[in-house]
Image (tube, rainbow, N blue to C red):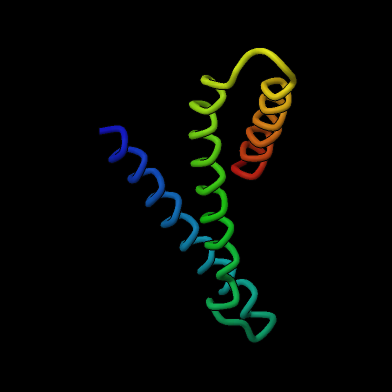
Length: 92
C-alpha cells in the first residue's frame, strides 16, 4: 500500500516536471532557438531528488542499528541531518 502511494507521488512529481519543462521550453524558445530536449535537466534534477530521498529513507534504518558507542553514530546523524536539510531545500 505504502509503495503504491509513494509511486503515485513520484509519478505526480515527474508529470509536474514535464509540464514545467514544456513551459520553460516555450518561454525560452520565444527568445532563443531551444528545444524541449535542452530542458531535460529539470527531469534529471527530479530523478536525483528522488534518489536522494530514497537514500535518506534507507539511512534511518541503518542509523537505528548503528552502535551508540564511539564517534560513528554522531557523525552519521550529522550527515543525515545535513542531507535531510538539502533534500528539503531542493524540494522547495
